[in-house]
Image (cartoon, rainbow, N blue to C red; front, side, top):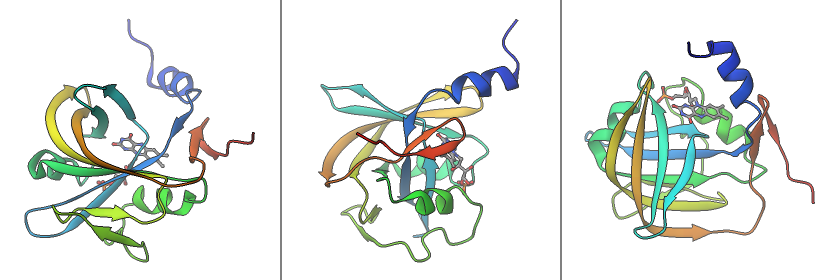
Length: 158
Ligand SMILES: Cc1cc2nc3c(=O)[nH]c(=O)nc-3n(C[C@H](O)[C@H](O)[C@H](O)COP(=O)(O)O)c2cc1C
């Protein structure tokens, strides 16, 4: 018998992860962004990453349709950006500094890393979809990552 939802959440909350905001744009030109901690490296050759997005998320279908997206890995000062893109507000980009790439996808300013990706595959992952992206371009800045663990944001103190 599988574990209960509570056991699953309690166990997985102990796994520390970084925090990303994944951005894209729909066919009507509307910008979309969602806070995602379910992100990891997949392959070096070709350079692949994955993100998992809830099928109930408002922006879920846009990621399937658009074919390209940007993974913005947040730095330790960007708790409020994480919270903003995790909230069901009409304009998630309000007050957020960004520029757009050749595919007109927002690239968040001051993020620790920006990864410009093309969608390679989408797989069923229960109540989430696993999107595999091939990295076309990356941009790395100075700083430390924002960390999420045990239901809260953490900082790396070394
Ligand atoms: C730290 C953090 C990590 C999150 N990670 C994910 C994730 O990996 N996948 C996901 O689908 N939602 C994740 N969420 C929840 C979404 O960001 C949230 O449901 C968002 O409002 C969905 O946006 P949308 O419905 O406007 O597309 C996370 C939220 C937080 C605060």
